[in-house]
Length: 246
Image (cartoon, rainbow, N blue to C red; front, side, top):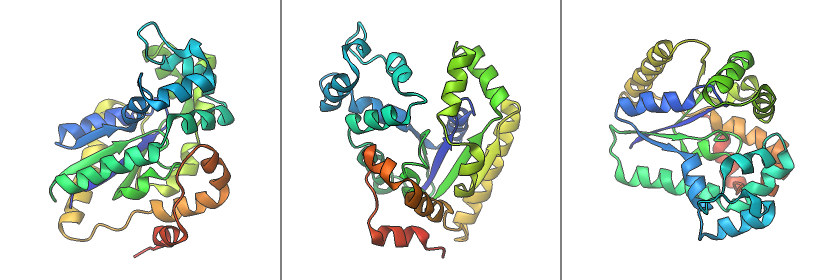
């Protein structure tokens, strides 16, 4: 069966670059943000709900929701972010459907990558075989955001504060990388880890992801917030399966 890698990281950590590197190795790569954007394109129920929740001023001249304006209304504001997630619709279903499609159509030697900022917290990684997490020190992240995205320092720090720290997420990842260096260094590290797990999979020795037990614990602490944001929670039987270690 296809090898599905979940890929997450804080803003400016370089997770999209990791996705590009994996694409260069022949992997199918899906940025979950693009799936989400389609859920609130003009003409969809999600579009109407998001505009009703956040105001007509978030609609740009092209008729699409201006994500920069919308982002300013929700980033760093957990309650507003939860309201947005609920208005968009079932992101859980969209991500799960994409991964199910890979498993139905791709071969045993293929690789697929699902990239999302909140892949871990929302539990989407439970459908992946491996969970990768990319991080970066805050001062380097701020520098990158100022140089490549034109943010102010205040905006950059606001984005970083809205995200769960790398150290808290790392126990739920099978591979972690602190991307404070160059792209060449990142590429060497990514290729080495990919070669390692592909070889283990080929030999039938790839271990079950550590994500399941981590998320099961996260559920206990964050269940109320997940429900408010519209994330579909697993059943008791599914939670028991998440905790299975063998």
